[in-house]
Image (cartoon, rainbow, N blue to C red):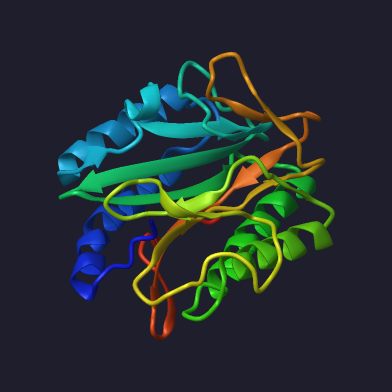
Length: 253
């Protein structure tokens, strides 16, 4: 069932979404060569606790960490650990927070030191995919409008759009209906209504769209070994269009 929220319920979502933004902003300042993904996870754990929230990912279906840290060919769900970020890497950071029964969820990809022009283009295009997808989140539209916009923009640059994982509704649970694919046909899918909250999250590969899951049961990698990038915002659909709830000041690349 798709949860359509009252203005008061959307207000209650602002707090965890604000916390997500603060955590992402903090982690973005930590990303540099020599930092381990475990250090990023530890910092997220501490800041979420300091802000009064609960890490939404830790323990979710058995996920063992507080954030997802996905390096280079990892698309999503990378498990933080002893991986040391190297000059030229790109890393995707995904954070979820629960507060007072509501959830926020957002992600970004970032450069580790200097990266290749190709890697920068992948990140830039993926971030723009998020923007064009969010722009379609208006009352009276369809979920397919979002996916079609993301797919068209990514593929116009020669990149692959991941099919196996999607965005989702968000609110009193981290993952709710409807699914929000990053591909599809405009005019199809669930009707978008004022009060719906969605996590829109393009997952774009530099090469082909196919992915596979590693033996840990979580880590999703590109099947062809190409780089991947991931950006995400939690948004509310208002009468005036989409409102980004997890906005945060981004580190300059």
